[in-house]
Image (cartoon, rainbow, N blue to C red; front, side, top):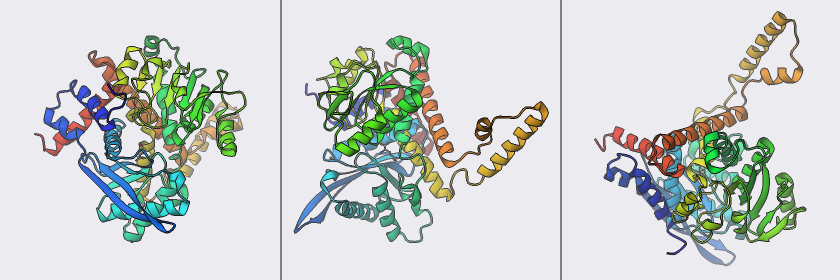
Length: 471
Ligand code: GLU
């Protein structure tokens, strides 16, 4: 058996397995599983005196809710199979966290590090133009966002291109999310996926019986974590787990290799070190243990693969030592490797749950864009005045003065970042409890991934049934 299988097939296998624990009709399962629309694009860009053909995709997996939603990735691994798999995961992800979108994904097969910012801008604008021509983008149609290899800068180019074609469309700013804050983005979106990983892991580790089953004590504080990938998701997950969760980051991997320090690595300092030297290797106090996959096998409580898909395969699954794996990347464990890890009693937090923080805050950004106002703008001062009034009354009645630090905290009105982070926290906790309940209530469901797919499938199926397509 080959260690690698098609990524889309891998997702299909998970879906089929989960569907067996539901009473959703077979034909409806098939409709949910397939990709509804696949757009394959080729366009030229000029490099020096020559031209290069760029290969790009946008896949809309499911239209049970609209718009469809999902990031755009720039990577050399991009092909139709990968984008289809990622688009389908977006449908299950959105359903799981009650974000009312269908799933989609885009991809351009390039290594962005090999292009100048001007060339990247040309590629992004041309790609957006192709999406506009095919009616594959719009605030009510399909809303892209950042993914591997893209960020707020690319989203700003997409918005500008869209607005140039759709001048005067009042909701045009909602055609893409993950934009810079100054360009109608939302505070907290940039770190949302990593922050969501932290909230999800913390929630998972808070259940005593579950932890007992895998031989861990409760609580994230003091737990050892190894992270593969220091991109947007990995770096924020590590940083927030360390700063807000008091976890110990014992290992980190990037393209150039894996480093460990059982006493803990200061993630903030490591990120600065890499910015200055271009590498994590040689960071004081750490040991270089091998290439970027070596990190997967280190001794730790929690492993966070936050790079690309197909990292844990039948070749290395047996050597994984972590007790919990949080799939911050999409598809880091192949369908063949999954049962090996389950047999080893490893608790897997599946990708389409644990990395759902990004699309959750994208949803908040889209709501902000459609409502044309910043969350907290209308009520912030009003709440502050009300709380100050209540506090004053309490002080009068008790004759005691509340210290300034407590006063600042208690009289705060909700600002945009407060509301975004609390909305994200609530979403991650609620979704975890749903998965856990499904897992515990149905003894025949073997693992959390299957339980999560059952939750999503039931929600998507009920949308289709409500549409009357499947009476
Ligand atoms: N690319 C991210 C994901 O895979 C975010 C998608 C979005 O915000 O629409 O979930």
